[in-house]
Image 1: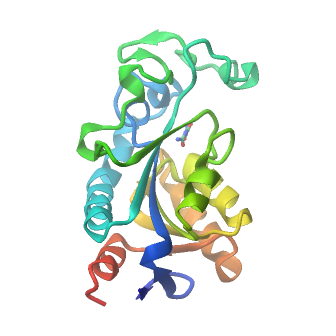
Image 2 (image 1 turned 45 degrees about the horizontal axis):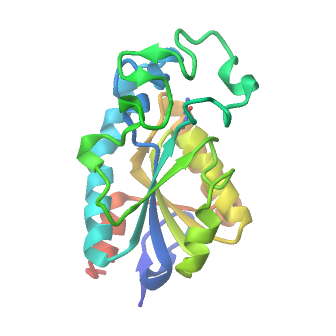
Length: 224
Ligand code: TIU
């Protein structure tokens, strides 16, 4: 059934039977102290604002029966999927694979790689481990979406200009219509978040649409 969601740069016509919610990398390594995000010099408390809006979206998506996909940026324990160029970049205090207070940094299966408890996946939801910033790179995401006839994607998660934007651009090039939930995404840099939203919806939705979480939730609930 088609619904209209109030969005920018113009309303988003959503077909709930062909829509998935993708929550990007709401994992301890980015949101809690002692993980990858902090090791890069970031103030991780800035991401907390996205948690409740993500919960609201997740609850609405579950009630509506949407396909829900949670992603995690994480690498294999032997680092075989982590290019040295990624591991050695910059002057991080802890590098990918180093032991930290939440286990080895950005390694799948370590406590830091877990999705935060507020957004814990249900057993029937997809948890996609991705080695890159974009969720299509070296993952089965396209197959998962194709097998469910998904053509529209609602995005939430962190960080707006890195993994969320990379994934939206990958999805847009693959023919998906992408809607970013504004309050449910966050960056360590407020100005980067604002610019990313502008870039996405510029030029007649060149990458996709943005909408407020309240407008998405009311549309999912059939209130508009
Ligand atoms: N550093 C930063 O802003 N983000 C990442 O490294 N990964 C994700 O955005 N998930």
